[in-house]
Image (tube, rainbow, N blue to C red; front, top):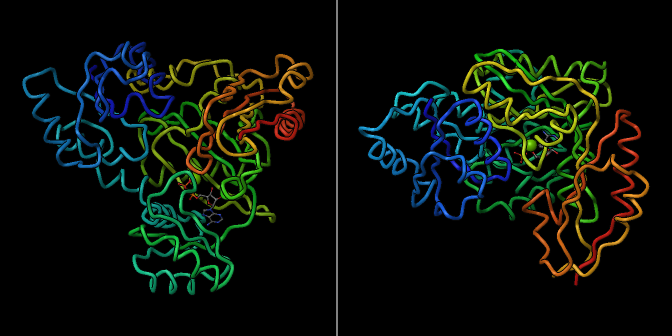
Length: 406
Ligand SMILES: Nc1ncnc2c1ncn2[C@@H]1O[C@H](COP(=O)(O)OP(=O)(O)O)[C@@H](O)[C@H]1O
Ligand SMILES: [Mg+2]
């Protein structure tokens, strides 16, 4: 099978998915806006060909270029994109090349936060009250409609970027002043509670594997406070009462949106009174090494499992949930370059082989922008069969591992 994959080198997980599809028997051709030699070695090694385009954002130009380049060649049989901003481009390419899979109208439901809530809500699933807005006056009217506290966020955002909770008119005005560069926003009722994920690998509308994770603390809080070491967790026990409502909702959402084949990443909220509320859904895997959390949880490969599902329509990874696994993302204290790292040896002594990844910036390296990347200045991954133990260890990494910069 000939697969065209958009952005085969970015985000960091993509080369593993390329390899997964190749292992399942596909020939994968890459399409992106960087020179081929800049792709990660694993992507380069597994691609059968590569097409560089001047810009992935000029979608119509990319479609014309691909049509020209593929004329007279073996037919493209799949177009894949697991990088959020390229999901619509992939759908346009499928339509232009006559390839099966999501078309533009369906892909919009996974990109446009208002359309998705409309479609999910129409199926009788609980979504936050929501209003689409393009002008400041429409935002004010929207907030009037949903009430305080409200959330104002980009209609097609990611990573909590430009997302604001507003509790009163003054906060709304200050949020509006910071959102001038955004064309269209979604105004939502603020949902208090815990924030979970429901992620799947599907084949022809059938769920072959699913994962339930949660965030500590909620992403918007983690992204608003630099001192926090955010955690993402995947749960070992996905059959518990605690997540049953979200799992049922996740299945209903996939059905409502008629999702067929590929990876999905849904977020949902659980209120203190137990009510579950839909958050958002994307037609791609979660980022920030969450697929690795799945892998460490089951000692399998979700990359290869996805490749097999996409290419062969089967899923033969052995899903035995053995661990709760956690990523803890670290932010250095101070600006500039990393000067020292404290507490790591002691944590390794305490937790031994429960720690499965340590990937921190090294002394001398420039700090990353924690607003732009959840991974921040690096992360530690650990796992344990017992949830409370895993969370306690993760909290210790949060407090006792310290990076300094100056
Ligand atoms: N209606 C809402 N109620 C409460 N919190 C919200 C709401 N919408 C967004 N948030 C917060 O903002 C974060 C980012 O919003 P989200 O819709 O997930 O967009 P994205 O992850 O694509 O940036 C969420 O993880 C959540 O913490
Ligand atoms: Mg989100």
